[in-house]
Length: 281
Image 1 (tube, rainbow, N blue to C red):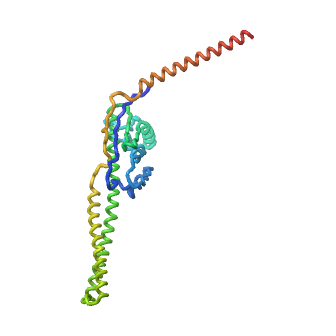
Image 2: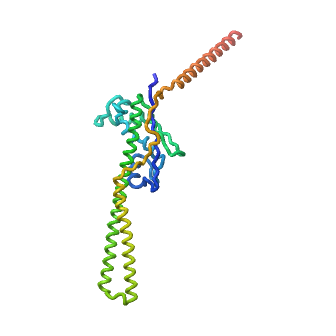
Image 3: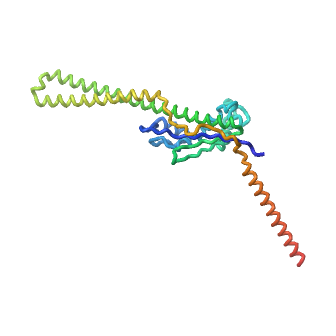
């Protein structure tokens, strides 16, 4: 007997941002590499998220989330997931493989959206699993964004410290010059040298102020939780069951019957022909 499954779906779109919301550098590239994902581009790509949803990391975490009273792992493997069990990894591999066949991702490049579709034995489980998928993607984005923001903040902090030291050194050079040349205005060469030192101090001051401002922005970005995905069509489940498809089952059965009758007819005709040839001979 064919299994009964209901279909739930959600449509998402990468949220655009003028300053390239996710610079896929250090932290994200490393984390994506651990998942076997190539995300080394300069901006978030639409096709990154379908690859994330189909990754082992994502499906294994999705299998262990409640949907709603049990887990997908338990529905597929018939037992509660126990990471201390010696068969846990083998069972998880099986659950991930089966769940991978039940999760489909449809990408619409023109509309810049992708749809995650899940088919499970009950409406409640299918709907909860789709909602869990959105939650996992959001958690992943938040974690990655904070890693990237932390990397950026540490880099800017280093540059601020370096700029502060360079500015202090330049100001000390001006002080030393003034102590040794109190009447530098009377010498054209000394006056030019003083102006050169002052220009260097002014340049370093501008650099330091800019970096200090960037550091404050980096600290804010590190704790900001801006959405990276826009939910175009919220999680929903179809009332009618998706599997088995009665129309497809009927058509398959009719085709099988017609094929069997055709084979029976051809077989009987060939047998009759053989009998007629043997009778005349």
